[in-house]
Length: 313
Ligand SMILES: [Zn+2]
Ligand SMILES: [Zn+2]
Image 1 (spheres, protein in one colour):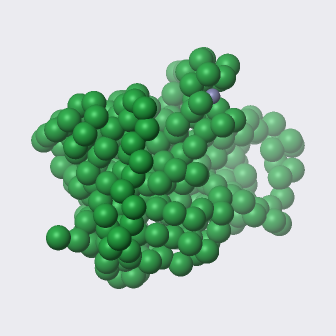
Image 2 (cartoon, rainbow, N blue to C red):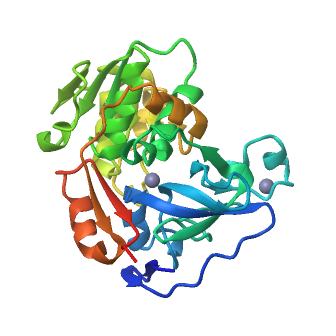
């Protein structure tokens, strides 16, 4: 099969990858479209020491195994199924877990991938590819709602207007929160069509009791810590592997609650997308062999989402 191979930070299109091995209770999925996400760019920079086929935001169709013919997305976290955490339903924290396209498991930047049947989620035929590939990041945004104490505060600041930041703002706004999003480049915010989300370019210190950091940067985290009111809740959505130089004393001095947040409920994400909360975002499609152009597009703020698809055979 054809697909992309990431090794030591460099991407290569390969027309002759080995077909996926289909394990017990797994299905073979033909990839229709896969989104490039910030994590993929991180993988290329050495995060998780990934060598193989990346890609974890995808929509495909089952070609063998369970649910043949159905359109599917996947819960990308695969637990061992036997440990205490797996038994308690938190397989995303299984010590043995592998993660599709991110950690020790081939992903969706290829013609086919194998997925455990339990991780498959059926998608309505009428949900567009452009929305369906957002199921994983929308689930990550919905996880904030799952984790937050209720009732939710009425106001929230989202720091960072990358693709995840924009989705987080849209999701929180749909829960009737007054959302402000702090942007550096107003160009990014052009993707926001939701009039209920206020776009700001600066923020006063100690002005928000609930904040979500999606900046992916040390400076974004520092801004969030400064903007937090005493006893605020700060949700961390950034994968910050190197926050050198950030003054963490406000966490203690202001008695902040820091809430780490990763993956969320895919079924709820599909329902949210199906309910029409988001208009189809501006996306662009490239075939796998045009990976270099696709990566360029993914780095520019012009498109909300860059999708990859198999080259026509
Ligand atoms: Zn992602
Ligand atoms: Zn486990």
